[in-house]
Length: 112
Image (cartoon, rainbow, N blue to C red; front, side, top):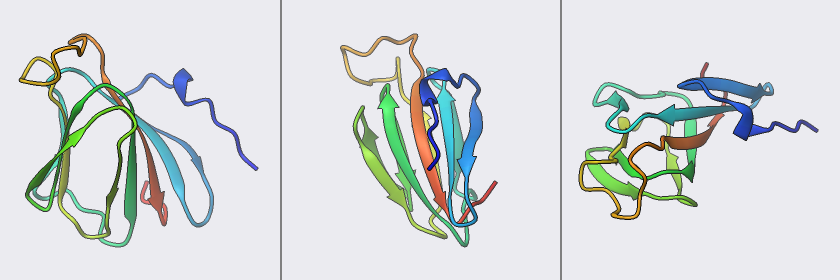
């Protein structure tokens, strides 16, 4: 068994654990920051993205999906995707624009 304290990570993207079959990482996007885009794909791995804090948008296969704390998104192998922190750009009114969009991501099989 492996246990990881994800609240202790603070980098933009950090792989925090892995096995031969999967990999976990944390990601923090500052307000207005995004990662990925039309060319961003993991050809052989699914990516599960859990929103721990903040709000944003996931663009998967050209379709936008709202991200809020507690949201779990599966980006299937080969799907183009982008994750954006939309703070200050029409996001939730009760969202603190200084907070990052913090996600926990699981890749199966490992990507990084």
